[in-house]
Length: 196
Image 1 (cartoon, helix red, strand yellow):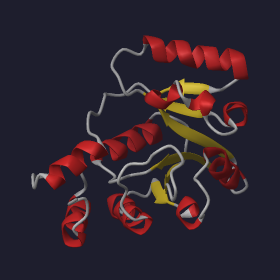
Image 2 (image 1 turned 135 degrees about the horizontal axis):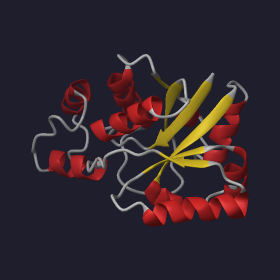
Image 3 (image 1 turned 90 degrees about the vertical axis):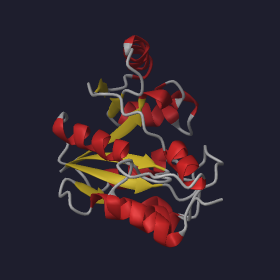
C-alpha cells in the first residue's frame, strides 16, 4: 500500500486540511492519507491544545472517510516530532511512503533535522499555499538537482483558512462554522478549547 503522511499540529484541524488531503488522494497514486498530529512540535511554540484533544479532533474530522486514517505515533512519542523519524517509522510498514509538504515549508525544509535524508529517501507531495507557483516550481527543481529529491506539485485551489485565525475567532466568541468539521466545532465548544 502507498501512503502519504500528513503531519501537523492540527491546532485545530480545519476544512482546508481535509480538502488538501482529499486532493492528494484524488491526484496522486497514494492509496491512503495518514494524518499524524504532532506530539511535541519542534518548530512551533504557539499556544497548543493538548495532544489528546488535537488527536480527537482529527479523528472526528476523518472518521467518515475510508481514504483517511490517523496515527498516534508522534503523540505517543515524548521526544520532539522529527519528520525523518516519523517517515522512517511508516516506511517499515508500507510499500511506499510519501510526505505531504505545504509549499511554505518547501523553502525551509533544508534546515530541518536530517533534511538531506528526507529529500533523498522519500517522495514529497507539495501543496501550494500561494497562487503564483513560479518560485515553488523553481525550488522543487533546485532540490531535485541538489538532493535528487522526487517532488510533485499538486495543482489545487488555495485554501485560505488557518488554525491561527480559527483560534482568534474562538477567543473573540465568533463562529467557526464551515471552517471546521461540525463535530470538531462541537468538541471545541464542549471542551472550552482556545478560549484564552
